[in-house]
Length: 145
Image (cartoon, rainbow, N blue to C red; front, side):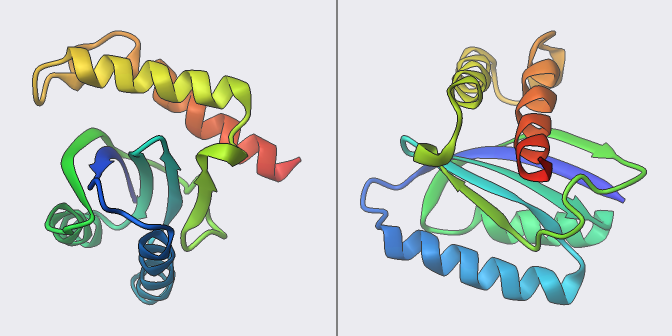
C-alpha cells in the first residue's frame, strides 16, 4: 500500500462544473481500481491524497499529470503505508470554503514551502512532512468526529 500527496495549480478557466467532472470520474474509476483519497481545492490550488497499490498509483498519477485542468503538478510525498487513512472515500472533496481556519493556514504553509523549494527537493525541507501530516490528519479527524 502506498500514499501519494501532490499539489497542482488550476488553469485560469477552470469552472465548478470541471471539478464536478473530476470528482465523478475519480470516484467511479477509483472504486474499480482500489484507490481511495481526498481532493482539496482552495484559491486555485489542488492538493490531493491518493492511496492504493504502488503500480496503480504510478499509472494514475501519470494520467493526472496530463490533465488539462491543472498545471505544475508536484509530488510532495510518496511513501509506503500499512493502512489507508481514507478507507471509505473513493474521493472525498473539500472546497476551500469548507476548510477550518487551521486547515487553511496549514495549506498556506504547505504551498509556501512548495514555492520556496526547487523542483524535487521537497523531501529535504524539514517542515513539509509535518505540515502535510497535520493537514491530512486534521481533515480525517474532523470527519471521524
